[in-house]
Image 1 (spheres, rainbow, N blue to C red):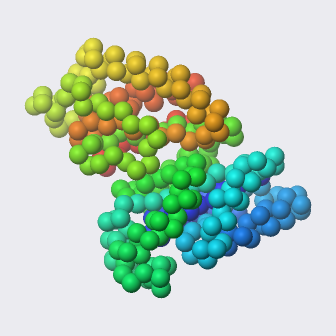
Image 2 (spheres, rainbow, N blue to C red; image 1 turned 135 degrees about the vertical axis):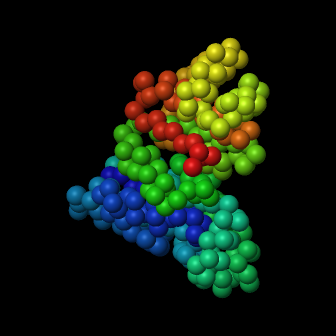
Image 3 (cartoon, one colour; image 1 turned 90 degrees about the horizontal axis):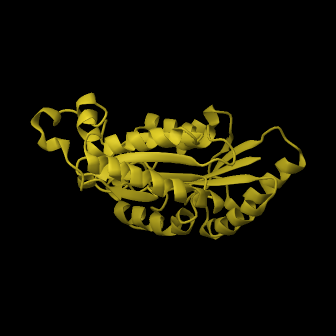
Length: 285
């Protein structure tokens, strides 16, 4: 049985993530009291039910006494011989959550405990921090549309083969901030910058003129070779430590040229022998 537990702060996209899994055949339950989860799974295992893919959303709407039980429940499931469990944590920046709630005028689940919306958002982060720390996969939805989030859920969770590593390369610009959901970050700002070549400025690392420029630079080729060797060596250790997901961030100044090109080159290398390799260019929208 495959079990996906979804958690995260209110307004971050948990409902969208749950719906995306429902669309691909998961039996989905929203706002399940955490203490009922072991009984639910035991019942389904005893009945030998055909529902072998289940997704549940457990978040701050739970009573705090229930929520505190989730980390120990998760650890027990990790040891269960008949269950493959993954914890997905969905989040967004404080300002983004504030804007989403302000625009919809919905009441925040923490409103009864905290006097105003900004403090409610911060309090929820503190409440969910022990769960966030356990996440197999974290997704930052700050700059994602609901359609992009659905695609990521389907690619990284639904289509990932069991016992395989889902690897994502994400290009970004440091001037826009480092993504919250990356596990490893590499800095490409030391490489030659096509931005300073007037005829290349309007292009991106996906365009042939920039590809031609960067592919002829010895430092760029040396960087890509070193990163390939590093990841070739250490990614198997992630798998040995029961990691199902790894997101590698590749950054440059603006996220348009160097990081995009290097991301494409690394992904091409690992696609040659890995089942699940995805690409996201955060600043190319």
